[in-house]
Image (cartoon, rainbow, N blue to C red; front, side):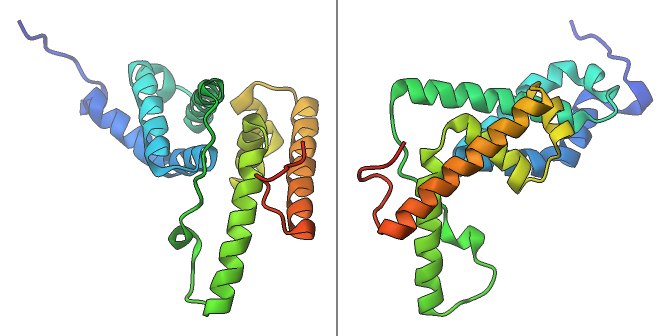
Amino acid sequence: MRRLNVVASGKSAAERFEALIREHYEALYRAAYRFTRSVPESEDLVQEVCVRAFPRLNEIETLDQPRFWLMRVLYRLAVDASRRYERRNVESLEVVDSTLLAATDPGPAEQADAQSTREMLDRAWQRIDSDQRLLLALHDIEGYSLAELRAVTGLKEGTLKSRLHRARARLGKLLRRESRLGVPLGLGAVR
């Protein structure tokens, strides 16, 4: 037996959800990609956010800024996925797809330099702690303020500042060491 659902403002829950997600999808996907560095994993992460959000559609629609709620769910899912990944003790050798970062057609020398820099940055990025990667991606790359990060992570401002500082210092140390010595980070890396 089918039930007739009364829909607010003439739209079904699916239509309302689609409109909500459409507005925030790009930001969610960019953040997920920065966390995972993998297109399939980012898509899975955003899809999981959608799966968690749909049953709470009525609640989310009442929020002033639903993006923070969605980002908080994304953040927590990414942290959980990262912890599960680390427990399995598998290292990723993924490198950023150069076509995603190329804006113009540089010459061969510029391409080689850019590729070398991307590989060095990617190796350093993979060597920092996953929580540090998440915070740097949200704050330094995506541009979230400390107040917004507080809403997403649930951490205090002082804690966020110190963790961001440590993450930047660690990333900088790894990059300086590799560029100074010309040694890939996987060979005798510094902690």
